[in-house]
Each structure stands twice: as structure tokens, then as C-alpha cells.
Length: 275
Image 1 (cartoon, rainbow, N blue to C red):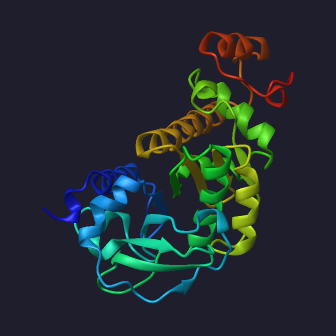
Image 2 (image 1 turned 135 degrees about the horizontal axis):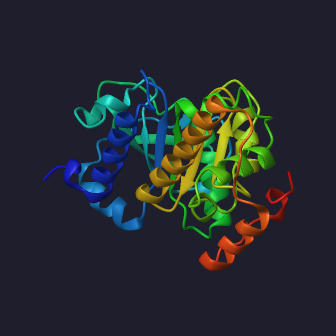
């Protein structure tokens, strides 16, 4: 037995590999974090090494005091997570005040957690609160089609949501809250972390203009599936726009309402405007 045989570690590694195979993680692009359950912590504890020194997070997340996370490393490649997990990811503990972290396992050849750790933890804090503890996964990737759309669509939640919903009938069911959009900002800093965490109070998806996508979910399957669905919808929209700029037919507002009633989801009327 090793830590690589522990269930949550295997699921974390598989999600990294799935994202790599989708083409969403060129070079060292993207990052993944998972807020561990008490049973995950107990299963992993026998493999913890001597804790490294406490480091500043770069953000204050008191709502995560004492929590444990598995996180990809800064500058590490998703394509290497499966073949060299101990070098590519780490398990870290957040101190009681939510201001510092220390590494308990992983990054065996040196390094630090993802440079976007402040964004991840600030958004984990928000999603933990608004989901009453259900959300545990934060995933950032660089899917090409959603990035392409940030150059041609207005950077507005209402526009992105409505266009993506129209592309596939399942979309309003998979992400009924819609998607939020963050204007271009320097990645890894406090500004983008704050902007994203504000959107995450409402949405489970944030599109980062000219950069990528940020998703939150209850587990690995739901979070990967959310990213996958939004990107596939974006791909259909890119293909549609390349054929002709105006649609001959599409799903209408009342049809969205009928769909919502059938699948027992609530759709925000902001997104059901008449075109």
C-alpha cells in the first residue's frame, strides 16, 4: 500500500489525466485543488512526512482554518501527475487562522503549491459557505473554445450564459445558475481571486477572459463534467458562428422555462430575455 492507493488520490490523479487528454493543460497550464474529507485525512495521515515550515497564503481564509487540501504544484505539468504524482502535487494544511499553510506530503523534489492558491482557497471558502459544505473541488483549465469566445462575445454573464445554454439542451440542466465572466486580469493575484470569489457566490462557473475557466463542484466527476459540458457547448457555438453569424433557429425563452419545469431546475429570468 502507498498513498497512491488511497481512493481520493486516485480520483484526483485521474481528473488531472482526463484534463490533459482533453488538451486543456498545455505546458504547466491549469490547476486543481480538493478539500479533503475527515476520512481522507485519516487515510492519508500514515504517509505524511515531517511538515514543512508554515508559509503565507497571500490571502485570509478564516473559513478554512484547519482544513486539508490536495493541490497541484506551481510549474508542474498535468501530463506528469499520473506518472510522478509525488513530484507534481501536494497535501497541505491551512492553519487555524486561515492565513498560512504547510506541506504535509508531496512536491518531493521541491516547489510550492499552484501560484493560484489564493484564488483556489478564497473560492473554496465561498463555495464551502454557500453550498453548506458540499462543494470540495475547484478546477482551473484552459479550454480553447471558451477562451476563443471571450474575444468575440461581450464579457457579460447574461450574454455568455444565454449563448451557451442555446447550444445544447442539457446545458440549462447541467449549469442552471449560468456562468459568470471575469474581465482580463493578471493571474495568480489577489484582484482576480476577489473578483472570482464574488462571482462564485452566485455561479459554479467563472470564465476568465482570454485565459480559461474556473469551476467548482461537489466531487471530481461533477466538477470535471461541468467543465466538459461548458467547453463542449462553447465548441458548438464556435462552429455555429464560423458557419454563419445569425442562427436560423434556436431554443426560445418559453422553451427554456418548459425545460426547467420538466427537469425541476430554476433558471434566472435575467438570462431569458427576448432577442
